[in-house]
Length: 539
Image (cartoon, rainbow, N blue to C red; front, side, top):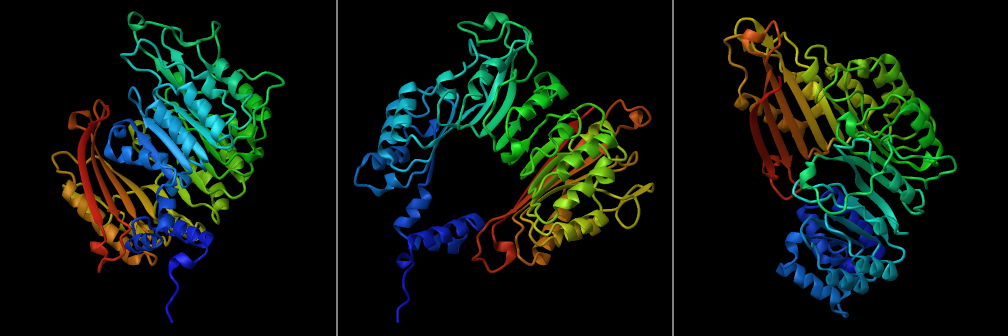
C-alpha cells in the first residue's frame, strides 16, 4: 500500500509543519526537501514576505517578480502577506510599480516603508483603498545628511495614516538652537493614532553649518521645550505593545525621563499591554518606581545602569528599585542589562531568579566598565553559572563576561603572574542544554613588563576547543553560534602608576555552525571560524 504524499494532508497541517521546520532549521537539507515536495505550498512560504531594495530596481529577478504579480492567472499574487521597501536612493521602487503591486496582491497584511525618500501620496492612497485592514510600518531613523540642504521633513500625511501600526523615527534637534525640537508636532499626531502599537523614538542632531542650509527647515517649535512629548491633562495614547528609545548615549540627545514626565507618561495610557520595553542607551532613575506594577505582562526588558562614559552612579537603592520593578512582572522572557557596577550580583540577581522558569534570553554586558574602572568588575564565575543552569532551564541565548583568576595552572607571563583560563566556567557553559547563541567576553589584566601577552593563535585555539566541547556535551546539539571576545589590557610601563595611556589588544573569534544536518560528523556540518585581532587605544 502506497503511502500518501505530503500534498494530501490538509493545508493547515502542512503550513504548521513547514513553519516549525522553518523556525527550527531553516537551511536543513531535510527541511528543504520537505518544502520542495509540497509544490505550490512551498511558494506560499517563500513569497509570504518580500523585501525590495533600490539596488534591485532594474534587476532581472525584480522584473520577473513584477511580471508574476501583474499576471492575473498566477497564484503567487495571493501568497504575498508582507511587503517591505527599504534602502535609500532617489527611487527605491518606482511609484507605478508599487501601485500595481497594491492593486494586484490579494491578501496583504502589512506594508513596511523603511526609506530615505518620501512615500508618494498616490501610493499611500492606493494602499489605503485596496488593503484597508493591512498594517503600515514606517521607519525614518536617518533624516539628516551632511550634504543635504535640509533634513528630511516629517511625512505628516504618512504619520496620520489610520493604518499606522509601527513608527520608528528620529526627532530632529538643532545644534545652533538646542531647545528647538519636533516633539510637540509628533505628539499632536500620534496621540490621535488609533492603531499605533509600536513606538520607537530617538533623536538626531543637526550639526550642519548654517551656511550649508537651504530651503525649508523642519517645523521646530519657537519656544524652549524639554526633550519629551508635551503631555497635557486629558491627552491619551492607545495601548502600546512596544516602547523603544534608540537615541545615542549622549545626554543631550536622550529622551527626558524626569520624575514629573514619567508620572504623566504612566497616566496617559494603559501599559498592561506592553510586551517590549527597550531603553537602549538611556538610563533612568525614576521610571522604575513610578511604573512598578503598571506593566505586569512585559516580556522583554532592555536597559542600562548608568550613562556611558561616566563613572557608575547606581546605588544599591536604585538597583533594588529595578529589582522590585522586575518582580512586578509575570513571565519575563528576555532581559538585556548593561551592567555598570557590582550591584548586579549583590542586589539585582536575586530578583532575576524569580523569572527562571520563563526567561529565554539573558544578556549582561560590561562592555564599557573596563574603560572607567578596571578592577572589581562584576563578572560571572563557575558558581554563578551553575546556579544559572539550575534555575533557568529554557535559556536559548546567553551573553556573559567571565572572570579570569590569577592562580593555578594557566598562562604564565614572566615569573610574576599566572593567569588562569576559566576552564571550569566554560565547561559549565558547555553543559547548558538549550543554548543556541552564546556570547562570552574575557578581560585579561595587563601583562608584566617585558613579557609577551597571549597571542591570537593561543586564544583562538582555546576558543575552538571550547566550542567543540560544547558540541560534544550539548545533548540536543542546539548551539549554533559562539561569539568569543578577549580583551587584554596593556598599560605601558611608564604609565603603570599614573594611568596616562591604556591600550586594549582585542581578539574576537566568531564560530558558527550551519543548520545542515546531512554531514557525517559534527566538524563537517558547516563549521565556520573567523578571527579578528586589533589594538585599541582607550586613554
